Image (cartoon, rainbow, N blue to C red):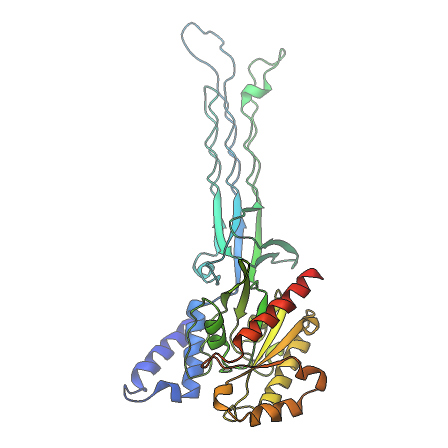
Length: 376
């Protein structure tokens, strides 16, 4: 079905859209284009088979050389099976490669040989995944491992030990043993890989609220920015430089729509990326041209965060009233402030990613709030 959707979208783009017709004016097309790119580029959950290598069997052999009558047993041990390690990489942000390589199988150890030669051990299999990847048992749902730090190998499946050759079973009463061990099996299980981005600040907002423009303006990230909805196809991480050689990591996730917590649209596939953030930043289109009034958008976002659970509603939050450059008289801002609770008004920061208005103040407030959460 996915392949047929991709073929349809390719044909749709070539057949029904004329070169002179602006694609961005097609709301349906923008959504279909988003789905097509999402199916190709981004994947934050993957089902895989993890299997470490089996140990090689021991060898039954006897020394047979000239001048060495009854030389005795000299069967070597089998090699150990290959182990599987997972390692985090901050430059990755998707699990899409496991769609084409769902079987993670390490090689088996080689059997032992005569002359007390140990078999070759299976090669270690290193799997590179984005930081924030968790590994669950597919059958029980049990959380097994979390890959949080970059460059730190985590042993997920240990290879089986090699079997002993007949040299180990020689004794005074059994000088020509034919006994050996077949080697120990490796670990085999079906697993679910799930990616949850790690960041200090998580951006939450409806499509086209200006989240990508914000992270581009305050950090070194270069997300795609365009004038149509669903521009962001996958979560982006941006690093904000702070004084004293510190930094703040900000996560930009694709836009959330109403009903996302119940699986509508892409549902929890993106909401779960804010689970590991310390602070939530609600980004709202404050202008009068917003498709949804900012107070309604804020209400929708709070409702989705609350219904998603995972204690997201307990996180500290700020509100970025974006696009102030097209509200010079601040009429829309004043109307928004009148619609929200008095206790929430002090959390509102008027900003503009075009004129850079209010960005420094917002970053300072986010840094202060993030440090408070870290100390707690």
